[in-house]
Length: 271
Image (cartoon, rainbow, N blue to C red):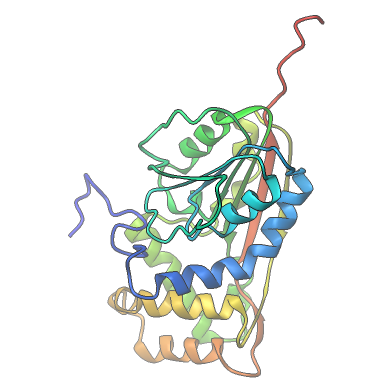
């Protein structure tokens, strides 16, 4: 039982990196949105020599991409749980185990700070976003991306609609996750004092065998016990899982909203 004085957080019990299948679940999520994330990073101008920070680095896929793209620049991969971080063979990546909520490591300024599917899982999300902005050097970019369930409520599958709605409610109650926090973008970035702020949406297609179908399957299986404890009928959950993997399924579920902004450049003292 989790005390109200010390509420459960992402990774305490649910989605702990040592849980069976967690690497497969995170891997599917990464594949679903990797191309969209790297396209945003390319558009921001990531280039050789940049110093980059990947917060909530997970399995390290984006950290590795940054290490290749920004080489010989340095990359810091930061996560509360580094058990799945794979940066083998990359000499320009430093793994830093820290809690973005409670820790404030002195890491210096970065040309880029990136966080994907992090803030939505934190009760202290806006305070952490403001902290991320302080880790930028003048002229540096912050890119944050979080989920938004833009389409599941209109799915033709009643089982999927009911199951996913129960999922979001359960995760909000248990770990404080807010599935549609990203709908607040770009206001938190403007509040943090960033300039050149913009947003974009990516919504992958759900079909059997797709990364988003694999992720939702793994996601639902991993929290089956907790979902059934909410009163969700087992048949409804099983029908949703069948729909996710049916050969004729063609649908939309949740997407990713990304927002980015730039730390203002220092004023020229000669002006």
